[in-house]
Image 1: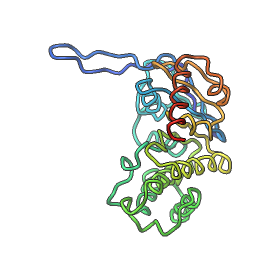
Image 2: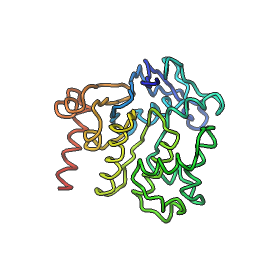
Image 3: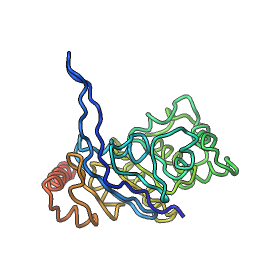
Image 4: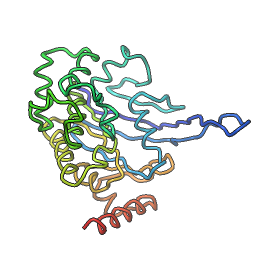
Length: 263
């Protein structure tokens, strides 16, 4: 059984365009990063803008080639490749973007949006039943199947994005700021759905977020990324309640300040 998605000692540089009359420059983004996402648990990845979260996420999704280190799933090394060569991986590891508008084609109905990954990844079985099951798991009624994203609320669209990822029944879900921009009731609804999927479906979740309260609500472990390095990692309550690194303390101070303003 596939149980853990792991990154081991990832070093990665990206080429940035140079200024006028200057050559492009390779900039080191990740410095020896290691992180694991097991099934049946939520893992938080937090850090300020520019810390390297998005690059690490792209590496875990086999969208970037590290300079050194490895990404491993079920003892198989994962690297970018063709759709055919990565089809098995895409069935096991799925992604939920920050903005559902970036992944939900506004011209498609919800039914077509959920059927598309089943067809592209060659998933066997009754697709209509898999679609209905995915809607149940994110607590959406079957009536949304005939609707387009523009006819749904922000919270409903985010749940459609989660259902689209879950319809292929992956082992691991990588979620990039899935509640960013949602008001409090919708934010809590989406977090409740993710928590339920961890507990009842055995899903492994990597929650990438700057929202420490969201991380605290569903993640048992948390890693803090700063300047391309994991600077602190451990049980979520320990990391957030007793931060040891200045980067963690800065994130925690911002969390307290936000909480005071929103109370």
